[in-house]
Image 1 (cartoon, helix red, strand yellow):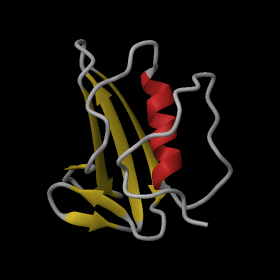
Image 2 (cartoon, rainbow, N blue to C red):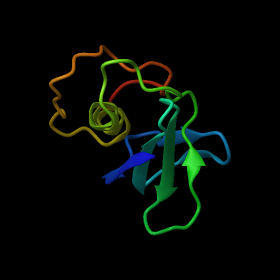
Image 3 (cartoon, rainbow, N blue to C red):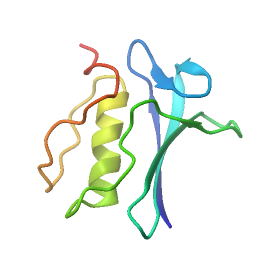
Length: 103
């Protein structure tokens, strides 16, 4: 399994999770991928022990897409507006993450 984690401040409205609903504030994003391409997208309050699945997040790593690229794009979608994270992969917009960027 490969995994990446990043700390971020949630956008206005927070991040919707399957287990506890919306989480807000300072969070940690973790993306994990298994050898078979199964992707898990998790979030936790900064410094907490519990992880929550992000509602409607992708569940598989698309072919010819790196974990780093998906992680960066998710982070860009979920955090307070900041300069965009760019990637060499152009996979189009993410869907199902509960809205766009806060303006």
